Image 1: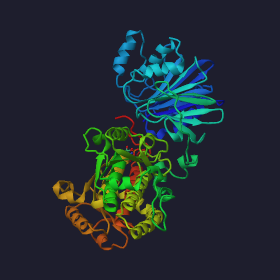
Image 2 (image 1 turned 135 degrees about the vertical axis):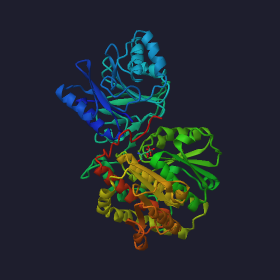
Image 3 (image 1 turned 180 degrees about the horizontal axis):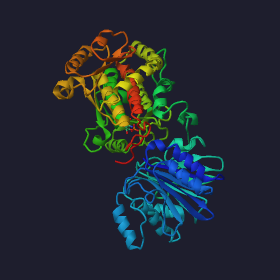
Image 4 (image 1 turned 90 degrees about the vertical axis):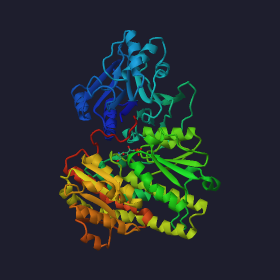
Length: 613
Ligand code: AGP
């Protein structure tokens, strides 16, 4: 959602803020702005549209000062416009605020403040925050105290950063609920605030992260974290392992392209240090799991959103096959509003690349309130889902910038395989000999992924033939049914083509009515136990004039006679096949979107991390 960057230190704040906001562009936004204290005044620059419009405005009308805050806005209240862009300023011009989240009671606060004589300049909910802070600063509160008192009035999840000319040596940041993260970057005689790590990673790798209902007062030479009730908090310093380069585009055209091609390396990093490739023994110390606890687990409920939910659907096969634990998979937005059957032996697994998805965080909260143990599989180091879970496994994929998730998907599958194998070892449902075989198969995975990526030119050529269709149907069965869903999501979210994923066995129950030469069918038909069934679905589609493209196993010459195009992938064990079968679909979606001139890394209406409902 919205991007936030703050700076205080000896350097000119504006270039640091603008560069940080640029690194958050992938989060999706429609306007941007910054404020700097210059000659004891707040200098405000805001513009609608892309960040370049703000950069141009600042070039034409420069600001200079060594403390400032900036923001990229994804409109929730009030249309994208200059006056609705953040930062928002108090009536006396002393205080400015940037904000991520939704003030759910802003209408009531707006009318209360208006009755006190406040004249609102925008339609946003955010503006009520800065006027509340002004109200309390006028009663001699300092900035921290005034902010604390002001945010107590707010309902909903918020991330807020505040600056005032009356206290030009500090910034104040607040986090309530799950409206996106607040990271404090610790430099040499300078400090940074950001809603996401990539914004400030080139300046420092040493960060502390606010938890919900915590606030920080940040100066150039230090910081103090308290609860909203004023109690001091001992924060945990996190050193981010990513190097700044890994968040750069390099020789690629788009971050999504880079991240698709990084998957071999990412999987290597995911596996590193977690499995002994000789013995097959898995170690996942961040889970803090004992053999007794592993044996007592009688159900896993996996909850997630979007691509992560499809990863969870694959995981169901892994946990049930390797650990013999029944698994329910539920969209987080559904889980949090149903009354799930949870007992002390139910484990909740939340999968989230960003670790900040509001529905997934709410599902975690709900599960913990019901007494369940919660694990999370996350990519963003230091994210809320990593911190609030009882145990976690990181994806180790490095920063995923493209809105369409790719390397996080495949590494989350690898994480679930490791977890299922680990549980199987602890529960005795996987023998040492089987563990060794699984380890050997995992060891081959990065190279197998690399060999699929070598077919990129074939996928790009096929994309040229397919890019004018307006409807696609993706079919899969068994463990590759979720890959049909994921392949369809990849295409729809970056090319805006309507694409549906379906269990192939359901064709006769409806979708077959849609088949025509106007709607290509993507069928995942690997040489597994449901191959014959897939063939018959393919024949049914062909018989109705459909264009069929099959993802098939290398060496399967027969299928080539039945379909229009074949995308071959190397033979891999059934339980690992989704990690390989998804890659042609990622690339096909990417190349089709590029041919259609879509904004691949920042698709319309989408954000990298959905921190509002
Ligand atoms: C995937 O390509 C989409 N960008 C989206 O569905 C995403 O997977 C979903 O919003 C969940 O994000 P998370 O993994 O960060 O929780």
